[in-house]
Length: 476
Image (cartoon, rainbow, N blue to C red; front, side, top):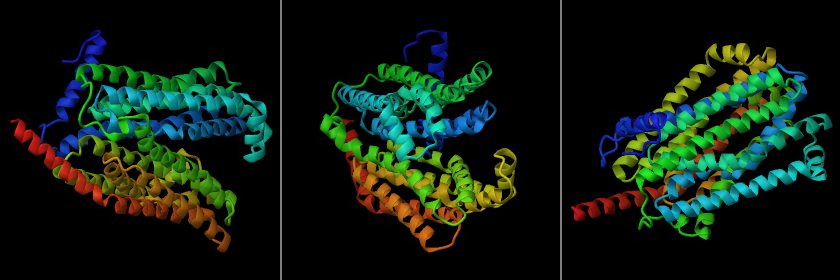
């Protein structure tokens, strides 16, 4: 039994134990029900996270000088996202590597070192005035008013990368041991915290919208990180990790091994983060740039709500797939989820629901509304591609082949940047149409590269499962 530290904690632990019981039909056989129950909290967590940013933006839009406030908040937020991007993949890294106490200590220390380095980088950019002005006003070309207003927000976001690193790392441990419901609860608490900060901050500090928005982000992720940290500590005590395990992956045996494992994943996340502004810069050079830059990002945001969270199938794969049978069931489950969400996306894109969401909820009108709807129709295949991206990434990361994951993301980036800019320069096609075609084409190129490089991984998983079964039979 897990240790109890009070009535409330006891209730939480009972909930987690009931979830674990529900998700483990047997020790040796993986069922579709177990996969679904394991995956659902992760999916809900992603959906709730999607709601956070629109909530903050909706609150700031009602404050003083909303255009500058929203622009400055967006600048601070996307800068923080770029700075945090190297540590996003700590979740699958912890899931794959934490097998014993030695691996836990090594990976935890590496996580803390990376988080500290990114915090220092954020501080240098924010507080050294010549660096800040040169980066945002000269290189990126932000208006002085926007750059000036964004600086206090970026200062509030100083600890954002470190908190994201802690949260992602300990969530990876929770997912590894099946405590996915805690991940969902943590995100729910995060969302509630953000709403409270936005409401109270808007009432009491209406002249400091950028600070209010940034504070909502930081407090939300702080609460989420604390939940993940406390729950994972309870989990590690209850599981009683062995001091050293014979199954410890190479990536958790030394700092050099961790760097070799994690560096490609970090670069993958950086490339993915950099891809969007590079693509939008190409769209800005195409026909109807203002219309396209207003419409296409909205369509991408809508597609992200229904597609991006299918990346969490990768975490399900890393936790549950151990042999040929579980591998085949995971592939069928991923296919079913991919088809289901693609149907949902298609239903939204090709029916009046697109007008309802983009028009009545988002507030687009006229040509901008029409362009966003058309872009979304091209993006309707994104859930299918995201699901298989996650599946093949799981194959590669689970067998410690992380460089191909990075290579495939580079394929995506090259296709995206080259094709968008070539089409913008050589044709008179509107940017929102170019983006709608090229974005899924680039992701398809990544999926095909992942599929090609992951072919040997299936054989490794099958062989590993057979060895495990023979060892268990011999032990009996």
